[in-house]
Amino acid sequence: MNKEEILAKSKQENRGMDIVNLEVSKNSTQFGWTFSYMMMAIVTVVNAIVKSKNSFEVCFVMLAGSAALFGHKYAKLHKKHELIFSILFGLGALACLVGWIIQLTK
Image (cartoon, rainbow, N blue to C red; front, side):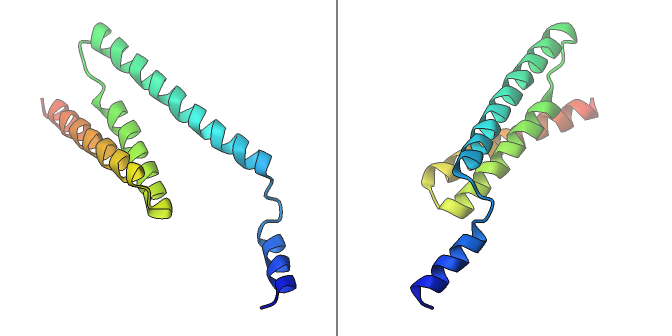
C-alpha cells in the first residue's frame, strides 16, 4: 500500500469526524456523569432523611455503569488507572447490590 492509498483510506475512515465535535461530545459525557452523580447523592440523602431508607438501587446502577465505562476504557487504552477505577467502582456496585438485595428481603 503506497502513501496515496493510505491517505485516501484514512480520509474515508475519518469522514465526518471533526475534532471539535469529538471534544464537545467527550466534555458533555463527563458533565453528564458528574451531574448524574450529584443527583444520585441528592436522591440518596433525601430518601435517607425523609423515608429512613437507603437508595441502594440508585447507587448500584450508577456504580455499575461507571465500572463498565472504566472497564471498556481499560480494554481499549490499557492504562492502569482505568483498571483500578473499574475495580473500585465494581466493588462499590457489588456492595450496593448486596445492600439492595438485603433491603428487598426485609
